[in-house]
Amino acid sequence: MNLHRKGRAALVLALVAVVGMAFRVSWNALRDIAGAVGADETAAMLYPFVVDGLMALALIATLVLTGDARKFALRVLGTYTLASLVLNYVHGLVPELHSDGGARVDWTRLADWDPANWALVLLATSLPVGSIYFGSDLVAKVLHHRPTPITPPIENAEESTETAMKRSTADLPESTPKPITATLARVPNQGPVDHVKAALVFKPIAQGDALPLAPIERRTVPAESTRSRRATGRLPEAARSPRPKRTPDQLLAEARKATADWPDAKVTAEGIRRAVRTSPVNARTLRDTLLAERAATAAEAA
Image (cartoon, rainbow, N blue to C red; front, side, top):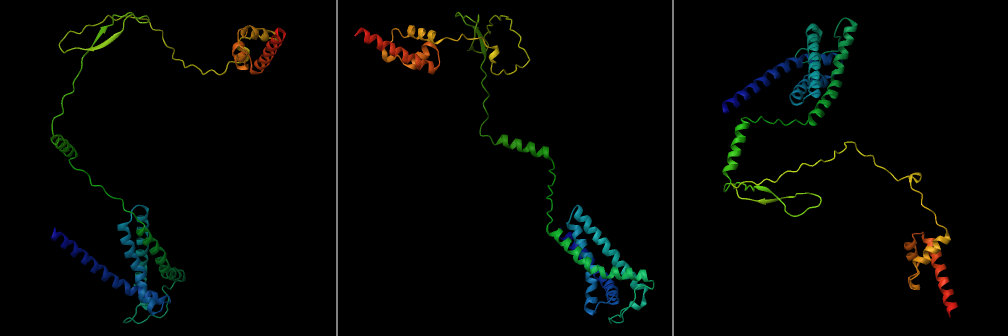
């Protein structure tokens, strides 16, 4: 394990050394290109970090991000790699761009053909602005990235389940008793029954005894309709049977007959309403009439 770690560390150090030397070679060309497009000495020294530094940042982002964000980082890496390659190639073709011992290069043309010169100047001057935009976007994507946790596969799942079942069985303090099964027998009831000729009762019997079976009577059961009944509402007035409407004289006659043996204290509107089945208004009218008749009868008798 320790040897494996040492090998990985040595590989990383070697890679860093190679990348550092490659950056030094590219740094010389990019510095001269920056001086040729009008950058001062300090800007020309920092220009290689703008281009090749963003390439390193995009490479790290591709190792962290996933999905569309990773594709975006790969596009940035490819674009700036291609741009650095073009500028290094132009630096090799134009001898006037080469600096002598780190001296500042005077402002010069990158190509003899004007459209090519304009395109190269646009490329060299737009790379710092692109580094600001794409670098900020990559850093934001890396900071907001939430890696998906990887659940390792469970090996020998069946064996682990079986082992857990065996352990759980062995952990029981005592064995579970067998369930007691009660045997039930049907015995006909001797009592008279009106709606059923025979009723069945259940009595426990010991195992091994014969099971007395009661005779089974076959009855015809009316078939139930599978059609659902529709809920009916209030019966309309036209479908109801007409109730005869009584006149006031008929109501008074019925009230006299119903309250003939009632004392005066019992002659109330509620009592009359229940006796003759009329409305509360008619009951109060009948009460007043009956009480007035009784008072008149009592006065005549006096």
